[in-house]
Image (cartoon, rainbow, N blue to C red; front, side):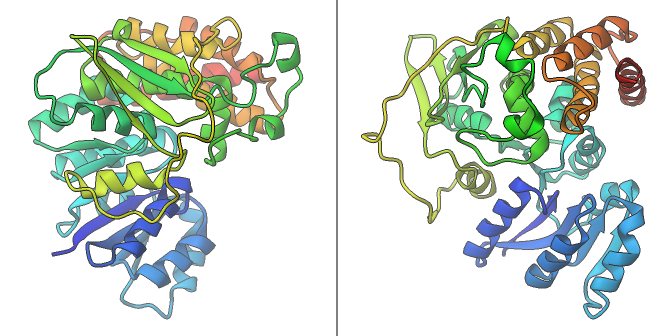
Length: 383
């Protein structure tokens, strides 16, 4: 039986690469549902190629255009809106949901998928950033596996497979350092979105590429690692590794360090989540360790304060990571639209964290309210 997949965010970077894997292993995987935010043209093309049972466009204003583009494909059901996303992940034939949506919007459908007992291939890091404790509790309650897709968390996962209950002494979370790794504060004052989007090693979507440049993405990954691997913040160390070859590593109680290495490409971690515990053929270039030296440096949080803010939010706990994420989504979009300076982003996030109401043990409804409040605070600072 082929594994039936639902791909949330099929038109983005992770989603399109996931479909490469489906195409290469059509004997193993079949697409049951595809979703996108607004990209009608690409979603329609994907639907025609992979013939899912259903497609969902999150933006309801795009529904008629998508419906018309697939009018000659009556076997493909077309839906729109956030409720349709929540509904589609619960469809009985689905075995695995790849959560590759961007931002807070991925939280609700992920929760519905967990409650329906679907295996989660997690690429939407904001889900665990915003609601880590809630997601972990739900996954345990419904016995739902969560398999990491981020290259760093996949590397950690691959390093601990087979280790049983052996104690993790430290997680070494690697970061490329982004395009401004060697910039001074003065140089970063005038950088624009076009500069930040020129990532030196990875090809990603715009939002995550900006987060990589500010190192907020790595801060999110620290929070995500805390929940995925049940390791406290003080045992998660970030290392700048410009070559992006060591995707992350785990240090054990005896001092041994296990790492996963590979070329900077997302096909492998996506496929490993799909095929786990098996490893299957992947037609991608192989790593040649003779080509370049491997370097590691400690991050400078004075130049990249977003990383420190993420640690602060994690240590504060409660709804503070939700505040962090909401404010970051606001300033990230504002920076891309030239309404916010690069160095201003961390300042707005920090002040939003100070002003937002703190809730030590938030419910899901309170997290949605927190997200709304924090966005308003951050937007008011930018207006």
